[in-house]
Length: 325
Image 1 (cartoon, rainbow, N blue to C red):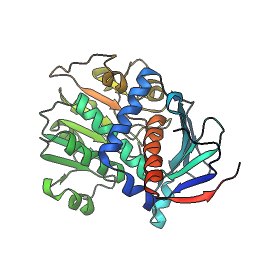
Image 2 (image 1 turned 30 degrees about the vertical axis):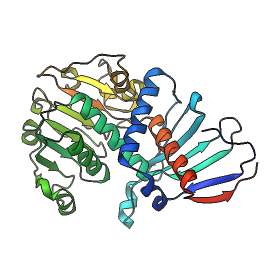
Image 3 (image 1 turned 90 degrees about the vertical axis):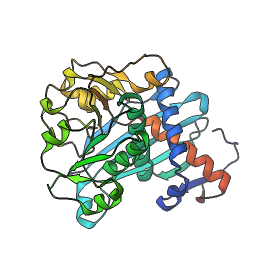
């Protein structure tokens, strides 16, 4: 990602400029590369910042670098639930890439779409590696942006899925969600235990305000993508479940600090990147319950952002502003 020393333009990529560059397969490749870099410790993840604000929002910074790729940057992001009251997105994210040789900013990107798709791609990778390939039924908690992308990419990763159960925070059917997946006729339910017990795959994509179902409802052979817990105090999975499962994480330290791992510190996780690189062999037994605790890795944001920055430069897209240094 090196640049010449006399470049003095900063590239801005707003939301409508980002979307056309986000090709799902390219994002999947970038996220896979991030996990592989993390496994090989060729990419560094700097200490996580995740703080509650007086406004009711949550503000975080995920940052890191990849020395061999001259890649350096951060994502400032968080969750502002009050945004819904004015019809705006509660998740907000901005990504900044820097030249590691000079400290000069290279690119500022609207990170909302990146966060959505890179998290969905991570979930798809988890399903491909961990879920039973013959899985037919899926249960989704949450019908927001992340619930939808997780489900959309799950249907792509596990082609045999043909039964969808979903649950909503307010207990009411979501017409827009059902329309988005009308080919699969999603069935709304308020019976969490029954839906979980009849599903091969479970996706939890909620604000993480508490356990969503009883531990005993999860049957042998189930896989769970747990998306919502990314801050101290947030959780989606019930007490006792992690003791019964084979636990995987994008980052073990983050899982223990802000993910589902914070609720059972005796559980040891395997990093998903170690499966991709072959560092840790994995064979699923038919009765295994697997959980992928997805707290979000800084390297995912950086590798996807770097891909977008390269595309923007080659296509001449984005907005250029002078940035003297």
